[in-house]
Length: 326
Image 1 (tube, rainbow, N blue to C red):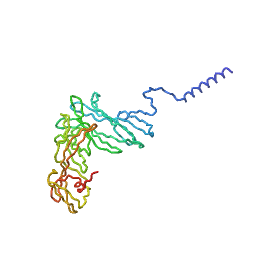
Image 2: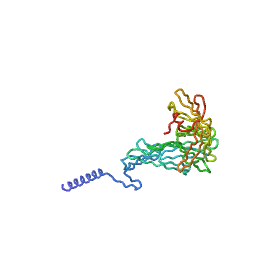
Image 3: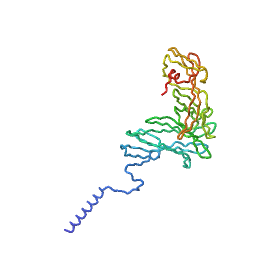
Image 4: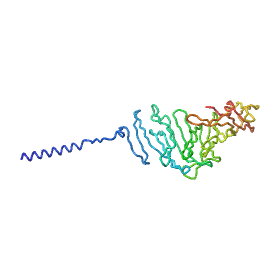
């Protein structure tokens, strides 16, 4: 009897030990290269890799994901633009991108960075991108539009052209910074394709100190170059229509855009009518370390004042016309 009782007690102890072991969590060793308690890795629905990093800076969660634009076919070669994004809440920026071909060969890459603002759950500045194939009479290539939004100036728009040279995709210039805006190009025959305007140009709007002028930029994919379509001449103007003209102010007007000519002073009255016709300017494409810029100099504005046409240039006249330099 005692023997059977010993068997029963032993059996109960074994069952209790098994139950206790099942309650203890199992620890599995992982490779050190993936062991990070603050990094969760998932695969997004579009098959691009997404990482979520909980930074030590105010416990801000930064999400990284990859976006692909393309494919774009340029002279029978296939290119894809791969962008790496950083995201904090609703703040999204492109941290870097590269252009690869069908063999995963990198033809161009660029790094912008993604700096978190001090004391704010957002980035100091954000970059947004849009990529298209561009077609013209002088070849075809790619264009990338950049939009910079910053907590502090400067902000703005820029673009960059790429053409094919001996099977390698090359940038025609550095980033082309535009102190204003870029006019839309017409759509091409295929998706995400644009066509250059007549003469293979793209129009950009450049703000001067007083108003904006529309400058045509010539794009030549065959020669891998861009330049102002003309070095000087007359250009369309854009101006704020809400400008107020102070009555009693004087305008200095010239018969032509030549300061050596005799000038005439006209005083504005409440009944004065003024039409803004177009601008004259000299245009240069200046190259800087990080970007190229369109520079406007020797700026004149042609107006019609009470039916009389003439040119104005000096800041006092621009002020009298209601244009205010920031």
